[in-house]
Image 1 (tube, rainbow, N blue to C red):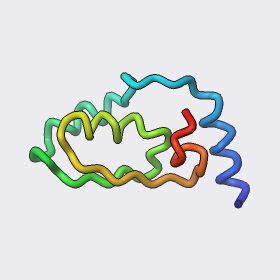
Image 2: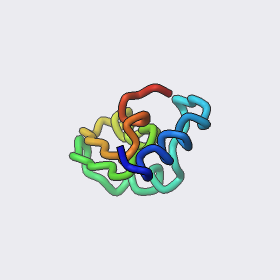
Image 3: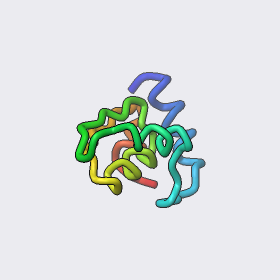
Length: 74
């Protein structure tokens, strides 16, 4: 693992779980997407925006440098 990945693992470990959490940016942009859009959430972290998009009926791929975040430990 590289230093950036480990650094982001530690950052994500400190964020409390919150299934209702997503960014205002995601909320504002979601209304612009056609229904069932394919979305790539790059640097998606713990997946809060990705889960918001999935909940709105979109298909989402999430990418992140943090193995911790991608494994869904939070």
